[in-house]
Length: 129
Image 1 (cartoon, rainbow, N blue to C red):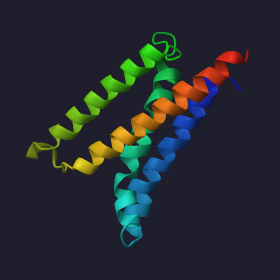
Image 2: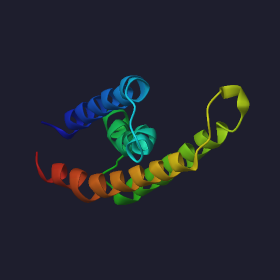
Image 3: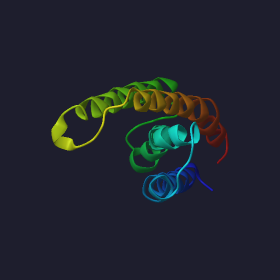
Image 4: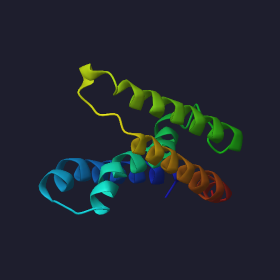
């Protein structure tokens, strides 16, 4: 399996899990704390973790995420865009809620993605044909 196929499969599986949490698990099942809290931040955590996979799958020709400098820049820009997205939720027109925990979960997901992709995944697949 090539890295591009692995990233595609990981991203699509993650998207199905996120949508399942948002549209099936949270509305129809009731949990006590801390499970309810974890299910609340799970889409942000998983979504931000999956960003490098999606970038590599869709933009791998244009952005070299094998380079540690490019991966760090991608992570920083992604975090800035995630914070802007969360801040836009303060505008009442969108009908969404602002939450500091979503920003924290996004940061944790991006840090996890950086260490998993940069220190393990991209280097492992770079050594194999």
